[in-house]
Image 1 (cartoon, one colour):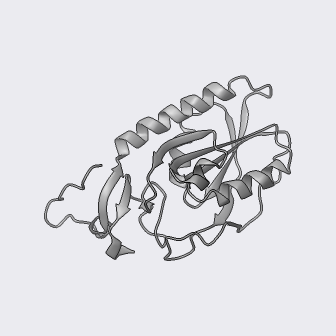
Image 2: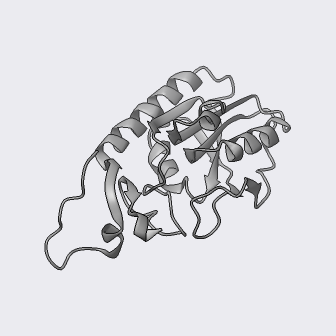
Length: 195
């Protein structure tokens, strides 16, 4: 686990002062996302409908991961976003997953790939998978950047996993605390006093 290097005087950004350490650096993340894209491509190359995939990113945390991932998918892609909430406001404890908007309407008979930033309690992924399954997709898979190594996450169906991480609250690459830190390019652990 890398420590943040001391920036030059006068260049310390506010968010960097709140970071305890880097858990996964941006270079490892970029390499792994490219590998995930290759895994997904190999699995979906035999599609019988011109290779079209419906990506269902879970907002807002997945947007940066999604933007990086789709650059490695050569298929025809449609995106239908869904909004869910489990960590409202300044909290590090899940309040239970809830859909905050409607699912995309045209999922029947489609190859669907759910994309999310992190799999921890598993509640959000399970809820959205169940709701999409009711709409009779041709196939249904899930891809997450991070999965916590806790029983609830390990027991949740997920076909593509970027990294398994310990049960720590992390930010960066789209993950937030109180809607901050999403713009950090590394996966980082916050200092306790920042939460």
